[in-house]
Image 1 (cartoon, rainbow, N blue to C red):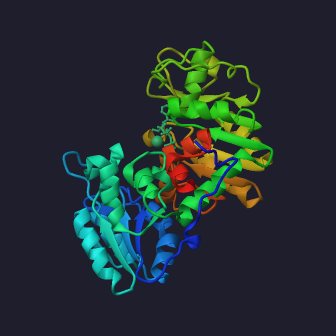
Image 2 (cartoon, rainbow, N blue to C red; image 1 turned 120 degrees about the horizontal axis):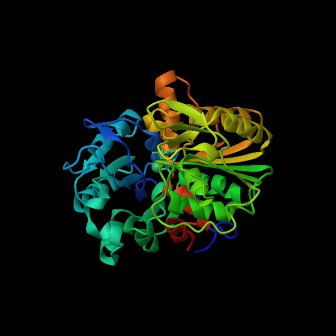
Image 3 (cartoon, rainbow, N blue to C red; image 1 turned 45 degrees about the horizontal axis):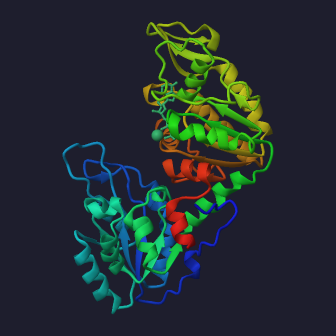
Length: 396
Ligand code: ADP
Ligand code: MG
């Protein structure tokens, strides 16, 4: 993989030779949560707006290719149809196509009118060729446009047909959001100092490589969430009933590293009653669920003196009510950002915790950070490897 860290030749959308009536295949990520047939969070769609606005102004014929996974209602085939309403509301009159053939015919017809048109193709993962990156399927998909634009950073860690197959066949460009993701997240490779990396959550296998990668770049790496439990366990401490990784982890060089900061007090629960405990005193019947108040104060000091802050992963089991420390860290980073620090945050659950803060208290922090990534797994992969398959495809 070519490292964006050192080499980035990716062309952006504003370098694309686009004229009125041009047929554009736009890979977007409209994989949004849907409940009772309605989109409940349009964050990702809004992040594509700059690209959509640009293509609208140029009077192009845009066919959007996206996938959707619907985790809530099992048995029901996930469909992108509810997204049409959102696109209409945002000012992009949109037509829905069930098949690639129908979308192609519609785009060819619209192309003659040389006026902006938007066609949304049904869930691309309905086709087996997509995830297998089947060459024939990529060829068929490529008939949807004469120019390919990827604005789906959050899917660009997947070597799928719509991410790597199609750009090999068409002139290819990065959409505004994808370019922004690469520009901003790349700052972590040459960060301002002190650089504080806050890593929480529970995805042990994907997150541990990040700790190793950033040990030399960061000044402090705070490990929170269930990730910290694994560190305590590896140190030979009792972790009781806490969530720990199921795979074996190589902690070589990590346990005594002075850059790594672990919580020094915890919120634990054993008998249905929360209490604050030292990592040294967790009982076999207890479960570690969050970071404690002393830890938060220590973090506040680190956050206030940092010039660059990268945050991924909640500090506690927030879906079950252990959310205050995560919310407080979000507030601290927002304040530090106001005071001049650069902050980058991302992660599905991290953003969900921030959204939840808004819906329960009205406190809106979404615009309080230097950059909010649309990527979860993609952000982690990009940070760990320095590029992604979908970005490599735009770079060649
Ligand atoms: P993100 O999606 O932001 O990258 P992850 O998916 O890695 O974050 O982790 C989020 C999950 O970690 C949440 O389900 C949260 O409840 C869980 N978690 C965090 N801390 C703990 C803990 N101490 N015990 C159990 N689960 C935890
Ligand atoms: Mg998650």
